[in-house]
Length: 169
Image (cartoon, rainbow, N blue to C red):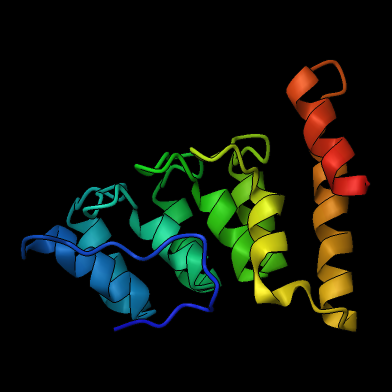
């Protein structure tokens, strides 16, 4: 079983039945690129969901698995898919602390303005993690996240104003 950093805002869901979709989820979390791509080539739904509504992309992003996430995005995984708790792969990527992964999701159309059922935007997930320590790496990640957010802010949109203000203050 995969272990998540504590505290994590979500838990990883499970597949309730066996089959190709269960295999896709398993190979994604195992970072098995060869078997993941083989299933995708067979036409397995890249956005299949587990019992919590999480896609393979969400799970890979939460675990910080960049290469698998890139592969899933190449097969048109939805970076804005809403899980049952309304979180997205963008929330998961921010929590993982993998800036390159987050950038890939945003480049594929991921939206940093979306909120989960508790009203948290992706940066709130980062702030809730143990990664908030004042290390140089963490500071650099927050600066990268802020820069990415600033690039994508649409200043005429009230939701963007709130997210951008929240990131920079």
